[in-house]
Image 1 (tube, one colour):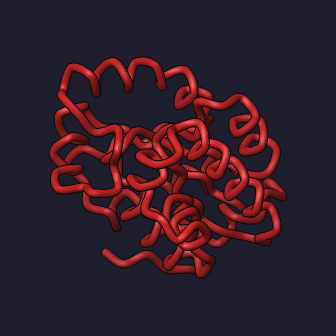
Image 2 (cartoon, rainbow, N blue to C red):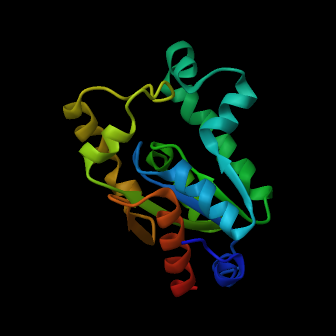
Length: 182
């Protein structure tokens, strides 16, 4: 089932905020669904991790290894602030973006956050072989990390369960939910 760009275009404009921020834990589907959503809406797609890698010339894992998580989070906040210059976009945030209050406030002020979620085991299965995921470790540690991040994720006004859905289906569901709340 293919989205019709005209059908969903209203979800970008009515609020006066042209940015959709996809938030959630690693493996929730932010990047894959975000690409589909941006294509369907005819807007730019931005992956914050990719933007950080391009600007630094280092992979996310290398930044974590060489400079630490604090420096990565600083770069992430800067990359997030740069998205304010975009008139309309779908932005896939990093799994830890909402750990900083300044990022939550920025997203709330400049767009709409959509929390993508799935059961932890589903998200971890999706992450297998993910070289860009420096915090990926044992299931127990991931469960603790997810628990720590839930308060930030729950600040998003919309929540989409992605288990059992493909990226295009998630994109269509996001667009419909945004349109319904606009």
